[in-house]
Length: 353
Ligand code: PLP
Ligand code: COI
Image (cartoon, rainbow, N blue to C red):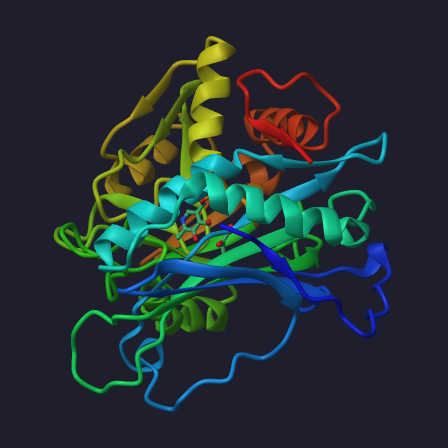
């Protein structure tokens, strides 16, 4: 497929790298491609970043049939630009699409298109400490139709946003809130897909958490409301008696690429790591017996995010004395050193541009 490029008349002023927050600034260009049943995915193009003109009946607006991804491009010390595990993002995007009845994309073509866009936009990759270019591939259902069925037409687009830390806390411990009053996803649903509805479903409880002074919600399973699932924008790890434990992928949590990287690094380092069901009662108990060493989250936007406090009902647990734990620190350093090209890539995770 031929990738067409339309040049922008004018380029935007780039922001000050040292003042970046998350997801507020967008670059000069975007990638677009369309789908219809006759032509399949067609008309791939790089165009100036612009609003999408939509019929008010466009299906994604009504029924949320869409999927998205999140990955980052990093600037290395030598000024080069590199991606972290991008093939895994396009693979996961297709897995999400299958659950949402969206036609799959050609993963290799999508990666090539992303690289083309990055080459054009490379000056937007920031270089201040802890910054990167966040990449948001997205597919939306575009039929103007009010009946409930899968759309026949779609738009796939990729946009870029230069970012700093996701949480205002940066790499300082966050406080998370556990509730039995709300659930985010259930097994058999679409919890393992990266689809807008999962995030919409998390907002109400998220607001409750904020009202209580907590940054995010730690979700429990939707059936017994006992087993730990994940946090709003990251997977979760517990260090209990020196062992690293993370909830097993059960269909209702996102199979995080950072999660998989942490598990792989732990195995390389000889740290005992288990993917298993872990209950909130177990966490409360091991904390009471002094065996809860650390809790931290993992995600593309969140990187490694230490958890300093958990609130569950009336129980408040302070973890690692509210400080950054040794294990969180080690994973943060190694992962970011790999992502920013400061250390050798141990597993073919880096894709140079
Ligand atoms: N869980 C949820 C709900 C997320 O939104 C994310 C972020 O993408 C993650 C986990 C972490 O996934 P990854 O490490 O692939 O970014
Ligand atoms: C990511 O980490 O890429 C996410 O998608 C999390 C959040 C911004 C939705």
